[in-house]
Length: 452
Image (cartoon, helix red, strand yellow):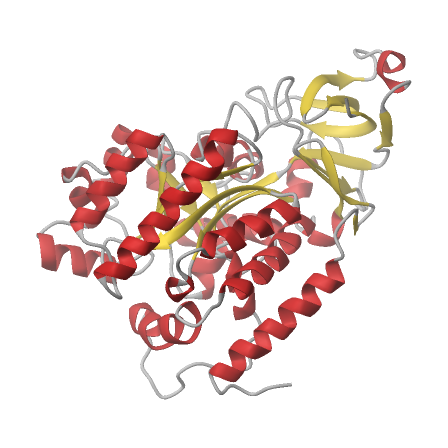
């Protein structure tokens, strides 16, 4: 039995009482938290003889962050040697059709999906993200694409919820291959109930026929696996839905019986704010708010009506960034700017979106998202480099407003130390990045982009 004893840290639990422990102690057996509290409440001598002792003096201990949306293979999109379509008027759907589909999604290979996913996972871990939710793309890497993404998740040590992005935009045959890719992975790994799980991944309402969405709902019910899908990141979703069905996307999904508590919708940037929050609440639909990714593409999402209605809203990277610290701040700033209200998105709530609300969105709140006895040992140790004392009253403000990726000192996932003193314990990080760079150049060559 593997035992760890973490001592002397400032613990931010994010439990229902938002408890905090100065000079805190956490005792872990295998992958489960067995004791947590102050040094006066826990007899350290009882555990220290057989346990690996980790001194967290001068550090903050927080639940690991949870990213609710990513395309992990898209690490290659950052810093590409291509400026885009300079002579074309921009719209998101046209950008997808002229750039993303033909130059990235349709050209990715299985090995590129593996190495880029692994590289992105390492970047996420360095940002304190312990759970990632991935929607893999690669319609011409079928069948077998998810075996390579699954391999990356195994090697990274991350807690992962994986899916393949089923789409009907290419052909019925390709759509069926993508859907079966999801089912194969779900049946392969979900019965193990381990660190890695799978869901059914769907692209969007505008790229998938009604029959596919209905079948996804049926299979999710049969397998108990849940569904993930993009929703109204661009105005095109609503234009297409109203043109084809005479209904906005949310009402359309409601009418075909798609919505439910196991549905996680990404983005939700252009919604019917008068009606959709109430529908989401009625069906307990969850939202992955990708604040920084949306801001990069000029979207202005509004989560306030959903949060006021009691809808569960968490945060995601969308593969465009590693840093959950940046994402928390961007989510806060977007809404304060939109409403000209400096009290919106208080620090404690934003940190909750990155931790316990993220766990709730994945229906995993009994396992992760807070530091409590009986939950999985997913946590991060952050350096305290503040110029003022950090204690119970200001620690959440410090994490949200000041911390950077470089402050992530130690990352523990499922009871295993993945990152220690800023270094990966069992992964050759530089070798992974070296291989990822080679595969990036191969893709750039296919697209006739400048080469190094």
